[in-house]
Length: 340
Image 1 (cartoon, rainbow, N blue to C red):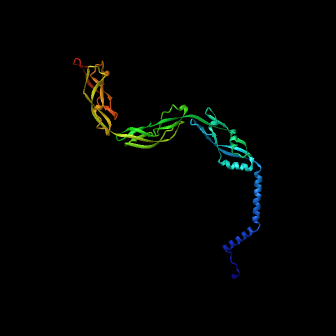
Image 2: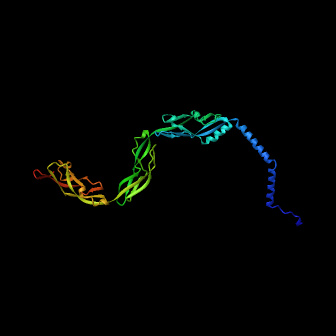
């Protein structure tokens, strides 16, 4: 009948029953059993650690006191494997402590020659004895030697330069290029110390479209050369130019004393590019267009070639509009005129 059926146990009742079972267990023999288990393990561990064992432990290796004139080209192995023998407890201390051990090999202790340096690892036995327990001995070290390849190098200062081209737009023309820094320290192989006279930026082409261009650029790598920095700041300063035309008087050079040159026409036009800021400052007095006496001496000619003898520094692309002119020479002594 319905009334005879039993109700299922609730989760709260089950938890209470488990808790009581655990309390009975810990009030009984289990704590005693656990105590004897710990004591037995301790005696077993003590006996095991008193025996003699052998263990191989890796030690990290690092070069130190590398001279500036030495560049390591092939690094030595990063670690050596050392086999120790000794009692278990002592070996355990060595193994746990070796995780932080770093063997620093002084380069002055290496045997160097012909670009190769070598060091016998057997010399490490004395180094290791400084921190090993007395009951631990070094049985084997692998590899038996540590070596690396190297090259001799020199520190030199190399100026920074731009080796590319410039494209001019809107009549802009280059004025100067500024680098920061303008030179860098470089480590150069000794046999190549006289080959490199500069280090160049990686920029190959620049378009001059404004007064100032600023950019950061990397340096082109040089074979076997290490520079202290791989990036420089580059400032390109340009000026906008305009075209100007003026007439310049024709004069002579290398003429004998007492001979006066007369050219026809006596003034010739020339065209040039000048900075817009200097447009009004450049005059005909800043140029000199000449006839060279050596060009006409002994020749029966009535026209002479023109030469641009001098020009100001702030102009470019100067072009004479007339290649030659007629001339005559006047001898001042007799006040006479004669033709060549």
